[in-house]
Amino acid sequence: MNRAGKQTLFRILLIGPALLAITVFMIVPLLLMAYISFRGRDYSGGVLWDQFSAEAYIRLFFERELDGSLALNLNYMFIILRSVWLSFLTMVISLAVGLPVAMFMATRDAKWKAVLVFMVTLPFWTNLLVRNYAWILLLRDHGTINSTLMWLGIISEPLPLLHNSFAVAVGLTYSFLPFMVLPIYASLEKIDLRLVEASFDLYANRWQTMRRVILPLAYPGIVAGCVLVFVPALGSYITPELLGGGKTLMIGNLIGFQFGAARNWPFGAALGLFLLTLVLTSLWLYARRYRGELEGGQ
Image (cartoon, rainbow, N blue to C red):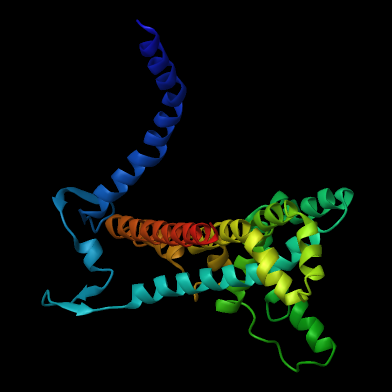
């Protein structure tokens, strides 16, 4: 074997394990899910493997009447739109809270930066299920928040803080806020503070310095944080299940219900592919936006 052949073989051996893992754990499950989504439903549970059907995708928008005709049914679309809205709201709130926190962290002394990063990542040391149960104790009718407000005389009866969209948004923001803070902090930490001083020397006020100097330099971290918050929030399961109380379904809960209680695997697979499409579309839009900013800055 010549030198070129040995180099090719060496590259194949290097990337072989990664390609094998991607194929076994990603490509094959996705192909299987796509295959199941076009199979018929076995009403006793499972899949009719020998029956081709697009019924799972039709069900996303329509329902069948007793005579077999199709009628428009947007209930599932409402759940999907609610998922997108709550994920977007979580992303916006996380950005509004995470950007000041990241700026504060990036402007501290070196000895405090490690402590602050540790404090931001500390919630990850506790299981997500436990953290969501903690929010139930805080938000329930006679929980800490309502009891404190009633003791202070601010309210006379408990506020409905649990089992609604508000509780889900709070839980999602709390769960994914570190994913916003850390990328922005990583970008801000690299900023040369002499640029900020120069903007003040050129008579820029605080808002102009923020808009023309800090935000453009922090833009990669902001984009990364928005992606890291929006994408996992879109497919979240535990938080809507516990804090939503079954009243605020998101697409992740709907998929779990189809594979579990409803035993409608083709429809669950179709919903999973639909969720994957939403995620990939979001990543594509962010990539286009980020590339446009880079081209505009050149």
